[in-house]
Amino acid sequence: MAAFANGSMAHALDFEDAFDPAPTHPNASLLPAAFAVAQSRAPIAGDDFIAAVATGCDLTCRIALSLRQPLEAGGWYPPPILGAFGATAAVASLMRLCQSQIVDAFSLLLCQNTCPGEIKYSADTVIRAVREAFPAQAAVLSALLAERGTRGFDHPFEGRAGFYQLFAAGKYNSADLFDELGRHYWIDQLSFKKWPCCRGTHAYVEAAQLLRAQQAFRIEQVASLRVEGDEILRMLCEPSAQKRAPRTVIDAKFSLPFTLAAALAHEEVTLGSFTEDSLRDPRLLALAQKVEFRAAAHGGPNAAAAGDLTIVMDDGRELHHRVARALGDAQRPLEDSVLRDKFIDCAARAALPLARVAAERLADRILALESEPDVGALLA
Image 1: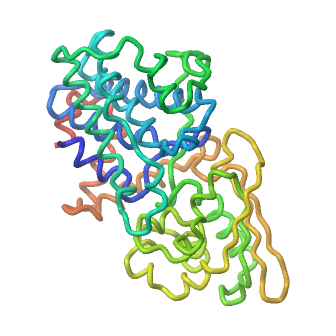
Image 2: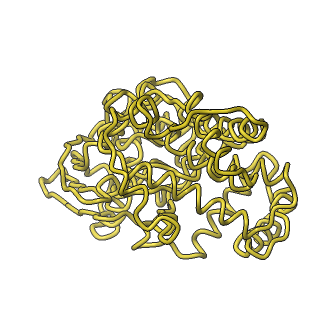
């Protein structure tokens, strides 16, 4: 239940890391599951915890890259489904399960692991915000059951009715699973968010801020906004009526029209840009109505984190900028100071907020996690 509770918060602010080459959030359910085990199976050393996270994150990324039919084709919503396998791998590592127990744990996970694509379309639900609760809990439960001897399947992944057959019609490439396994870790290629909204919106936030700084226009001068990007970004713009006037904060974070409006109207896009009051802000709603999306296949491994923005002014001028890799990408990383400030700001907004001095002290210990003798004690 600790994994469930913390999992429900892992994605609630939409501020977690992301894997752009195969859009997913490999650590959103992994870390809450690993935290729960670290506190209940003390002491777990910091270097062992890091190894478990790196292993689980790598597995999620490899499964995502191996798919040759997107999960969306079957009506699924990928991030929690894919992340659950990495969470299970991390928990199994921390619990030191043997090989057969790990196979059992993946089998038991397969009995629970689901997330329907309908999560994207209902205007009033907030399940999308707390979605990582389910895979985090399932990962811990699966590992506990496997540890206690519950037998699973022989082939939970590649079996004739295993994961790949059920979720991707058997279309996958095993080379993506095994290439440099144990030598190359995809955790090195994660992106870290500067802005608390869907990673697919970040290229447009960046482009809007750059054009606004260069041209110094007023938002009242904007006649229309044209956004062009990968097909996967259509979910951030449609249904158009819902995305132009989102009714929940989490839907606003998954709305390209609303997020783009916030980027133009606000000095910076922050957690304060997504509140119940902002959902009713007439300036933001008016700007969001002016956004039109067009899917365009630019290709490339990071297409979901790229985008073209054209701002058409009321005098007919067109301002254009393309971002090929949104800020925070492994090739355009955020500075450590930015990540520290982000952590401290988030900690200050907790139900039991941390004072800045305490948050800074905690940040120092987290950044030196490999020297911690007991991660559970650090969390406590």
